[in-house]
Length: 344
Image (cartoon, rainbow, N blue to C red; front, side, top):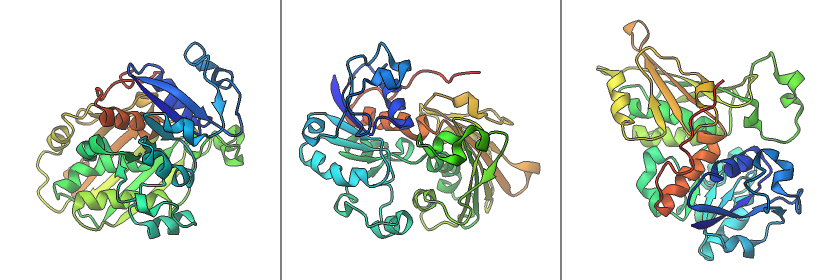
């Protein structure tokens, strides 16, 4: 049994960590922090967790207490992990960061997109990008994990088989993506109000979104060189979910695309390549640490269309973080993550 801490436990990714870890056979939550809710019982803020964490209370961040944990999750806004990760690593505690603090390898690019200097550039060389389908062996040996963002997870998993095989033009990639409102976080914001978000749909960040450099970085690794990517996210009137519709232009004989995807993800417990002709739904992954993918070639032409769906709070955040934890500590990869999706 290992002990873990959660920094920033009152947001959606924090409560998802608690929900999933409640069924983990090898993990005990030792500490959960929140400056605004310090002293409040976790089960009072989140009654769905009654009976699981009745003795656990939110507390002020205390580096000494967190350092007594085997691992600490950061479910925080950007910049917070910069300040604490180094100290925890020095004390022997492993860090799994769900924010964007360590996802981008170039500190200058990070600063350009996040509007502030990188707070811990000395740790970037050590940080491992936590996409298990690509970096599984590095994750096993890592002390510092940068959990991928939700959009980047869906987009990369959809494009990877095609780029790795050299089948599509890396300069002409298009990612048309939709997200539920929980992607904006739990903070009170007018655009996230029911009367504002329901019965409507809109694009945002079309001229540049913070996830763009992260996605480009991962796709460039797969392609073996720089990529050209048009990425347009949209807000949709649902609570959870990411739907990514991805377009690539074939530049070589494609062969059997279905077989390509099935072979690439054959041994991946959290990627489901659907049967030929499928159109995966976001509700089919709600609450599950799973990416469902379907590949199409309309009219047998030179355009490939990949459909990828995930739950933004699970495979796109907290579930993927726990998958990384399992790899780091030698647990079964599916521990705490085996529950099927919730339907309807």
